Length: 181
Length: 122
Image (cartoon, rainbow over all chains, first blue to last red; front, side, top):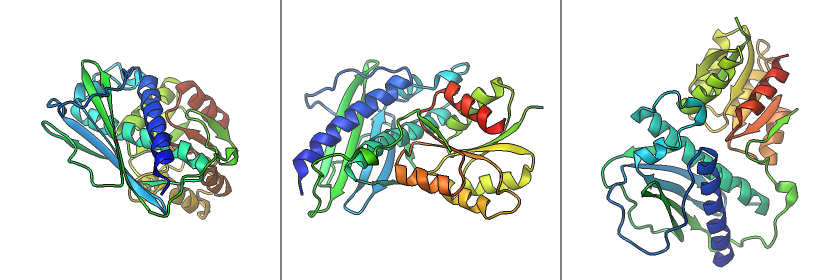
């Protein structure tokens, strides 16, 4: 498996996708927190979505605080405060859209991921258990006096080779783009 | 009464977001929570002018719903706009061949959504 190029690509895609997604919803993510610290004790929501293809399968997971998710509540709906159910639904949609962006970038390299529907969990001191997948990447964004943690965990087949180049014919429609037929 | 739009998405937030944008422009909105519910709602809404439909949903996905509509004499002319995180050309082509009238990739901008809806319902 050509792991190194895949990891570099995944890191770049997940970081830029998370920034773009939250930025589009009015929440600017800070710099990545590089130093390994304790797992945040204030995270009370986690949302996850699975994906699979021939040679890669895994999940994207986000953990954070509900008030941080609430601050990215869509502009069009800010005439009312989101309920807890709204926050859960929106968290699921955010992780869905995050994976969507990652998928659309990887598609240019011929990697076609199929995705599941999202799952959202509420709790206290919500944190990911140690991963046991081939690829286990973690990204900690500073935001609003707290952290948004994003994980990309995947099992990758030994035979997998990350393509050298991208094929523009496989480029996806850009986010927000419209095609009428 | 405005033209009736059926919005099918498993995210309540997205349904509300789309509904808010379109109601402000004078459209009437009917919601469905997944593909199976969407099929039922379409059957119960003979005066719908347009369907806006997600792709990845539980029970029945948006492409399966679309293909089902095209096999139905009753609904085969009902225009469908797909609204999804998916942007892959193969999937868009499958939808186009199945009779979808448009494809919009989330996150969407309300003005672009509204322009597409106006065009497809005019």
